[in-house]
Structures are given as C-alpha cells and as structure tokens.
Amino acid sequence: MFRNQYDTDVTTWSPAGRLFQVEYAMEAVKQGSAAIGLRSKTHVVLASVNKSNSDLSSHQRKIFKIDDHIGVAIAGLTADGRVLSRYLRSECINHSFTYEAPLPVGRLVVQLADKAQVCTQRSWKRPYGVGLLVAGLDESGAHLYYNCPSGNYFEYQAFAIGSRSQAAKTYLERKFENFPAASREDLIKDALFAIKETLQGEKLTSSICTVAVLGVGEPFCILDQKTIHEYIEALELKEEEAGDQGATMQEDPSSEAAPMEI
Amino acid sequence: MTSVQGLVASPDADSQRTLYPYVTGTSVVGVKYKDGILLAADTGASYGSTLRYKSVERIKAIGKHSLLGASGEISDFQEILRYLDELIIYDDMWDDGNSLGPKEVHNYLNRVMYNRRNKFNPLWNSLVLGGVKNGEKYLGTVNMIGVHYEDNHVATGFGNHLARPILRDEWKEDMSFEDAVKLLEKCMLVLLYRDRSAINKMQIAKITDEGTTFYPAYSLKTFWGFSSFANPTKGAEGSW
Image 1 (cartoon, rainbow over the protein chains, first blue to last red):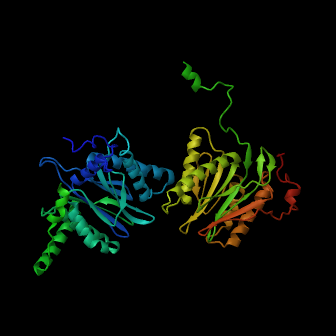
Image 2 (cartoon, one colour):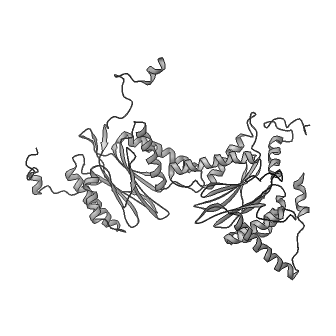
Image 3 (cartoon, each protein chain N blue to C red):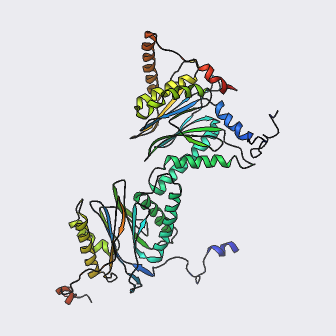
C-alpha cells in the first residue's frame, strides 16, 4: 500500500532528506488539468483547461478573481484552491479597508506561501494539494507568481502547471523573449497556443478553456466564451494560411509530456 | 451573577478613558505649495488653560513620505506616534521596495481614530497629515471622532475659524516656498493674536519628493498697537 515507511506523516524525514507527503502534494498539482500564465510589462494573462469529470457534469472553475488587481489560476485539488482564494480575497479586502490602497502582489504571495509552509511543519495538518498561478498588477508593474504546496514561491515571465504542462512550458520557453513588449492581444493568442499544446491533438474550443486578462487600466476580468471563440477562430485562420505555405514544422508534444504522466 | 458585576462599573470606579484632555496643543495649519506640503504649529502645550510647556514639537515625520501635525492631548499624540512607528517598521521589514504613502497613513489614522471613538475611548486629537509620494501631493485631516477630508489647505481647532478664511482668500495653486511660508506666518500671527492658547514660538516643516526638512522654531514679529486691542469690547455692548 505505502511506497515506503517514511511517508505516513508530513513531518517525518526520509533518510535521504525528503518529505514524502509534501512531494505527494506537489504531485497532486501535476494531476490537475493545466493552467498557464504569461505577462508583458503591462498585462498578465491566465488561461486554464476545463475538464469535466463526467459527460453529464459541468466543469469546475479554475480561475478566480481575487481583487481588481489580482487573479489566480489553479491546478490540483479545486476545493483547496477555493479555500486559498477565499483567504486571498479577505487579505485584499482587509488591506483596502485599512489603507484604501491595493495590496502589493508580492506581499500577498509571501503570506500565501507562509500559510502553505505551516502545513508542511505540523503533524495534525496536511499540505494544500493545489498550485496557484497568481497574476497581479501593482506600483512596480505586472507580476506572475507560482505558489506550490511545499510553501515555495517563484516569480515568472511565463509558466504552466498541471497535466501535460511541459508541452506548454516548451512553447512558452520558445516565445518568452517577446513577451515583455507584447500587446494584450498577442499575450492572449500565446496563452491559447500554450493551452493548445497541453491538449495533445484534442481540438481547442472556447468551451474547453478559460482565459482571464489583467492590465494597466483594466481590472482582472475572465473573458466570456464568445470573445474566446473569436480569438480561437482568428488563430485557426492564421494557422490555415501558414499551413497553405506548407512550411510549418509541428513539434511532437508527446515526447515532452511523457515524464509528467507518471 | 458574579460575571454581571464585572461588566457593570460601580459608580465610584475610576474611569479608564480620556473624558477630557489634560495637556493640549493648539492649532496646526497645513498648505500645499509648488514642491510639496508645508505644516506649521506653535510649540506650546497647555495644562488646562495654563501655558505650561514652551518647546513641544507637534509636527513629526512618518516614514519617508509623510508629515504628521497634531493638536489636542499630547500624550495621545505620543501614543499615535508609537502606533505609526510600529506600522512603518513593520512595513520596512518587508524590504520589497513598497512603502506606505501619505494616503495610506491618513486612511490608517482615520480607522484608528474612528475605532477608538466607537469604543467610547477616543484619542483626543485633531491631526493633519501631509506628504508627497511619486510626485503626488497629499494633504488631509482627521479628528478624534473620525471626521476626515482632504484639501489644498487644512487647519485644526481655532485654525479652522481663524486661519482657513485667510487661506480660502489667499491660497493659490503652485505657490512658491517663500509665498507659502508668508501665508502660513500670516495665519499663525492671527492665531497668536486671537487664540489664548497660542504662543509666540512656532515651527515650520516641509516635505517634498526629496524628503522632510524641519526648520528651527522662531518667533513672529508682533504689533499690539491696534485700536481694537486697546478696548476689545467696544462695539459689543452687553457682552462682558
């Protein structure tokens, strides 16, 4: 049943210096459907893949508005993600109440990471099984952070989490040098391309993804299906044109994605 | 029924709240000018109506971007300074390049003042908060019951009646430093003549994008030969 004798408790070290329960929580993030984020100097875009558990059910929301200047995309246990979203919302609103000013994104992310870290050091707790991409805008510009169950956090230019996210990461790594100067529209297009990479040949439709935008003079907003549909159609037209010229080289995403599927 | 006894104070129990102030400072006046904000206040503190202390600084710097001036209970002002010290230190400890500006500090003070009055335990002050952050000038006031507003010029206490009419007539956008100081001195002189708590030793502090400057306290030149000073009740028959 158990992989080994050192994973029955979050606070128990293995002789190799590992905390297995924390690693399992990190694994839960990889099981969830993909979420990606990317930013320019002025805008951040989040996108996620919507997967429903059954043909009869609707999908679960994976992108949440925290405040006008902050939003998150999650991968992993959605229930844990909602709990953390509620925490982030209350931190933001309390800050607005006291200072009548938006909470700096970096500070919110540190508070979130500290909250996750406590769960890795208490025997009666369990780590959150969710990874969060935190998109935010403050005085110092647009930011994208990744918070993971271990209590670590990182700032990124662009990042992808969840199942088959390696394919999206490969795409983003190829393109990220253009992102700082990119327009809002270009970011959305690259977000959709990155999402497409994680679908492994499955058709990208507006019903299978959610996209949210945040930028200077533009509060965090989840795009409606119709708008996403129009973006996807524009992409398909462009791809057809490129396909006619017959010079495009399609990467095989399966080899990239394989290690994630353990 | 012992718990009820704990909640209801017996009639002869000593009050643990400020029911009236003991040592008080009088008006503070603040104006916006070309490069930032100027605050002026005298350095007196009264024990009741006795002019008891002559060199109390009632204007202090708060963090990098703000100045705070206070009238009212001096000990409550000192408590407010302790709160703000803690606030600024906690903010600096993030060490992330963000810092609280005058708007944030003003809102924080408003929350503190209003919260304390809701506990029927007010901090007995009127405060003026001025500052500059990222080239943005800010000047506001908040008092012991939580009334708060922003304006191009503000004053507390008697200053509201004696200084602000002058400021409304003579204050202009983007005044030079020299003109703004002259205007403040005019206000302070009227306050000195008509406010019995005012003393002739005042201090001016300035804040710009470059930071804060406190000028040494000095006295204004007075002229007591006005005829209305000679017979103050003339034309006011029936008063004392």
